[in-house]
Amino acid sequence: MTCDYSEKEIVRLTRIAIGVLQENDAFLLETKCHERAIAHKLAEYLQDQFPDWNVDCEYNLQGQEIKILKRIRECSEHKKTDRIFPDIIVHKRNEKADLLVIELKKRKLNSKCDIKKLQLFTDQSGDYHYALGLFVQFDGMQPNLKWFRNGRQID
Image (cartoon, rainbow, N blue to C red; front, side, top):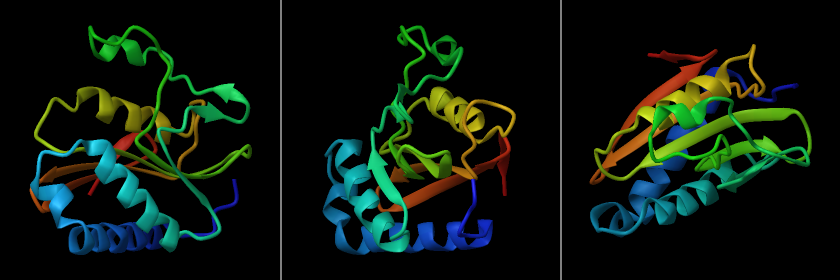
C-alpha cells in the first residue's frame, strides 16, 4: 500500500474529525443513542479529512471476499464466527490500501474483542495491513483514545 499520509497526519486529521463530532453532534454523545449513530457521523467527518480515500462503516469485505479475522471468535463466548464488521475504516475499496480502522464504544463496556481486532488489523504480518488502529470510547463528550500500530498499542 502506498500511504498518502504520515502517521502523525493520520492522528491529527482523525482528532479534527472527532472534534467536529463533539462540536456538531453533542446530542448523540450525551444521550442513549446507539454507537452506530455516532460511528456514522464520525465517518462523515473523517471523509472530509481523507477525501481521496473511502470511509465506510461496518464494511465487511476485503476485495471481493468476506472480511475474516482468524480466531477472533475466541475473544467472546457470544461470537460464533470469525467474520468481522469494523465500525469505521478508511481504505480504498477493492485495493490493498488500508489506512485506518476504528472500533468505537459509547459506554464503558468490555472492549476485549475490539482491542484484539485492532491488534490483528494492524499486525503487518497478518492478513490486513492497516497503518493505524484506533479504539474510541466516549464517556459523554470526552473520548478516550487508544492507538494501535503493528499489532501493539502505542502512546
